[in-house]
Image (cartoon, rainbow, N blue to C red):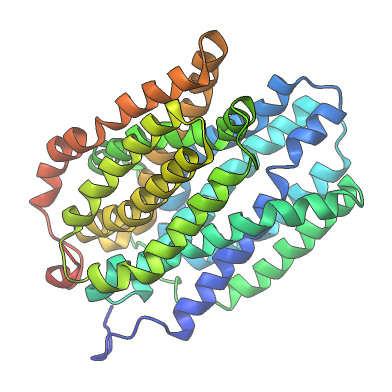
Length: 397
């Protein structure tokens, strides 16, 4: 890959994939907050309704490295189009299937294919971003999903009022549009010309996964936030219940627009990564005792700043030290570690919260989050000895 002397970041190629990411997340996150209501309507309990997100997340986590490797071999853009077309089928099935176990099975397959979009799109975008602006560019790239998640649930709720099938057909239509849009995205056609498809053991990148366990430590608490922070707010009389999410999303957007452009290319990735890894456990600890709006807002700001600066910095570090022909596998391996932490956190924090309190559960999440920096320091040493990304000297490390 070559970059222009001007090192321009905002190009048509960047914008086209950014819009694809936004559209895909907007489609998915109209569905995910609403489908538990569908499960309850079919006669399931609240626990059964929560099972959908659990199986969806774990299917995404365990399939991500495999789907990323498939994208490396058949072409990442081709995988985006195939996945979007399959989403049309899944969306229609969600609308017409009345049997809860079959809905869970569809969710498993859907989650697995979803990970292919995340891994392949991330790999393509890394090719579009000039190496000297990689951390900044990945930060802007992450805003596509952040903005979609911020507005999609409310949109999904509005459409759901017109009927479950109406919502599913609308999501199917969006997925069809994304398939057409994905086919027109420039790039992503290169393939790994290996003589044969890798063995099962080679579908994962063990070194990337070991280093990404640091993110599992902080995403453990993220899983608890996603599932239970609204309930925690309700229990403690903090209104609105969506306050944490609104402030958290605003903090991510703020830090990536007003902070990252000025510091991302001037400091090393660790100078961004470590403060982020510190801010998130502090946020979980504050959540454990938050009984006022001010404490909830402070916790949300800390978590938004922590995740907002640490994730693009971490991906810059990983991409710089891994083979660019296997970037789908690289992104898939990171997704595996990140989503596994989210899934475990949602499950374990729920169990602790039921047996003791959600305050205790988030205190446990804070303690686990403190392991992120030691894990990264120990596991990243071997990776630091390898600089294989093109123009790695300018990658912000």
